[in-house]
Image (cartoon, rainbow, N blue to C red; front, side):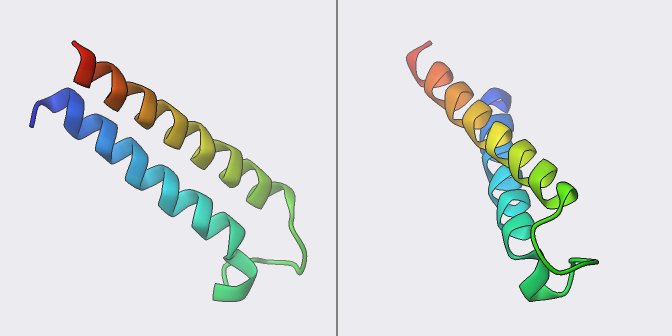
Length: 64
């Protein structure tokens, strides 16, 4: 596994963990207030961006 592949996998894993933590924050006790707040929205968007970027890099390293 090259370092580019490792970075792609790391982005995927961190993105999934961040997105899930943002979605489930109230249930697992991380949420400060009830409901879906701006911090959860920001965490979800950053997590989704990392997932997309990781998938794109993973696909790109497979081709080249």
